[in-house]
Length: 198
Ligand SMILES: [Zn+2]
Image (cartoon, rainbow, N blue to C red; front, side):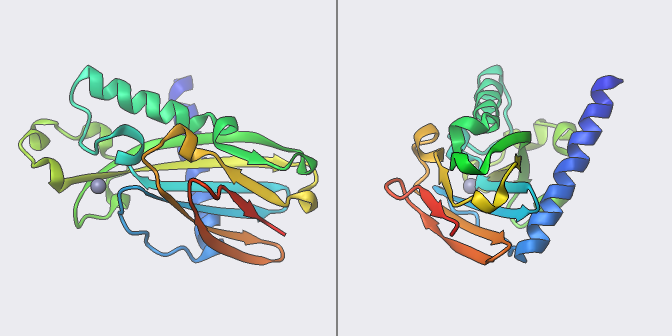
């Protein structure tokens, strides 16, 4: 019972953060491009919300529904790495930001279908339905949400993204951020990993 309540809370929290980030940024539908990751973030008072959206292949090396123990372990390990926010993000220390919550999930869907429709169905899909699918026809995403609480948000001036070190197949991170002073956007590459926020 406790687990269920916690799970529901986590889902609700994710939905709320996702909505805040999306509405703050007027985020557009992101393309599914292997190697590319989308990072949305917003500073709202003392809360720094971040959302990563990415083709699953960037983290797992495949996008099909995990059908054996080996696949399941790859997905589990990838999501665990994604949840260790301290190894993925470095925020300038003056702002005093600490991670408050993290959530990461593998969202399965097929081409032309909206992943929103599938977020809640992942666990109920019969893998028999998928066994015969061509590898290339199956795509899936990973969505991860991070909430940081910052003691002195005015001091926030640099966000370094360390995803490349953890997941070497990533070659581009497109970012978009909403800050009190306005919006920032651009792309990071393996040799350019810091977003200047001031
Ligand atoms: Zn794909």
